[in-house]
Length: 279
Image 1 (cartoon, rainbow, N blue to C red):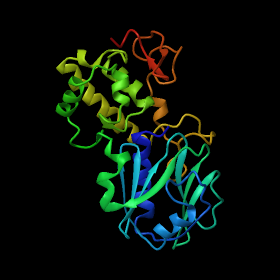
Image 2 (spheres, one colour):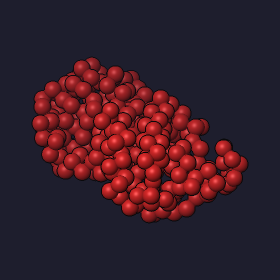
Image 3 (tube, one colour):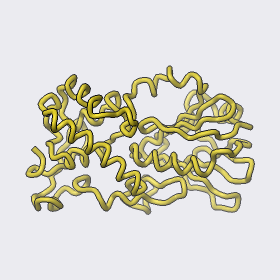
Image 4 (spheres, one colour):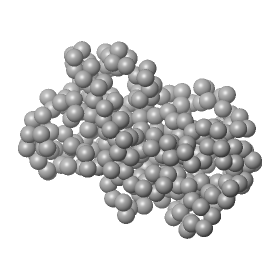
């Protein structure tokens, strides 16, 4: 599932490729790809509008248009945005195609049709129910160790469960939650109210460092041949999988101590950890 780093890489790609471009028409809309309206209505909402900026909050993409509307997109498990030229082959599993006036197309593809888009008035974003429940973005400068400390003090959850709660701060998913716990050397099962001030400060650094590194590596892709997994707006895979220390490495030796990486189901999700390095 694309998490903050993958969505940020897509955002940067779209910012470079489509800002300034005008939407000429919309085709190939799957009924589950758009919330609250039909494909015809989507076209009416965005036709003739120009992409002005591409934003992001947590795992949500925000495509701001010149007509005072914003396309909110969530990629869920397998959604992808891809910009193609007029002569390029169609993108497999396209669920919506925004034809640009210059002949290119912005395609939204999703093999599992779990992701979606919707259009809202830009001046109503602050009151949007999906965005309103999110905490501060994990790479926002205002996400400080002090902010994190207040959230930790108010919680009695296990650390990894805390990290996945998007109301605390937005963007961390299952991959990076396991990695962050390992990086900070704390068990994913430790209760957050038992963290010391020093551990919370290290946790803050680990969150920012891990997410930043993943963005720099273009995100995480596990199998470039699978239609389910993440590719950027140019159709390129991320390179961060080679840097993962515990995620999907159960049964293999820990890169730090040599002990065996374990996997345990935690709230219906796989948690990966080293029992020796993490306390």
